[in-house]
Length: 315
Image (cartoon, rainbow, N blue to C red; front, side):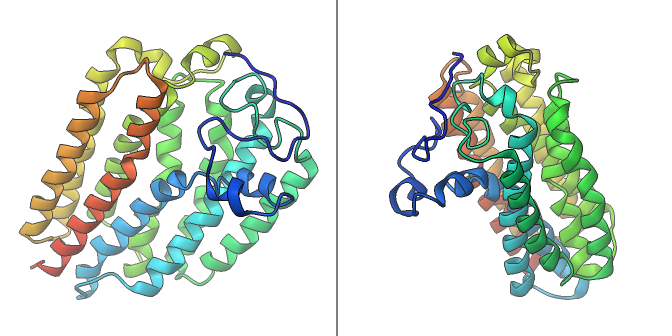
């Protein structure tokens, strides 16, 4: 449904984020900026963070450790928080005209006029500055990879205008931490993080296709492309491929890293979660799509637990 929000209303809420801590507790003048950074919807931060933490844990045996470095876990958590916020703010600047025409996104701060484009750019800069400080605390290999990721971040918002597969580009950007985490621990790359990166991309193709089904009617009207529109009623069949590929590549990654048997036991539970998602998906029920999309936080936690325990039992 096409919608036009009331302009300059600091109390305007996103349709899928009402009743959160920002609405309840944050000072009114902060709320538009917190919404720009998606502080009211932390699921995106989790989805960006999990590949980082997977990689940090996966790399531990490569340096003779049993557990991931807690300092690196904290640094990557802070980096994921601010860079997800910066990316969402940048995306809102680029997509402000499209967002204003879509019911679910019409209340976004830039699209609705709560935050000017100039102030939004300033907010991007402030978040990137924090991200830069985090990045510079890592080793040279991780810093180089972090800088390289900026190209993917820059082009992603434009892909939905050019291809029905923008989720591929989201996967490339959102799972870059699978490479950076390993590099931050070992100072280089290898087969295990590359396989992990591929697994993350396949996982993103699955969960963001589910997410995109919420907007498919509006997207078709305004001319925005997505895998939800491309795959349509065949979505479930494709999800078996996306999620099956993610599971297979995760298993190969753990094997390449020499993880112990508990990893494969834990991974089987994570795989069961993906099967559950596919089985109960209703692509014509936005509430169902949003619930399943958010449930990928639990999938990420299951994989992290599996990798961490498997690393402790590694050979």
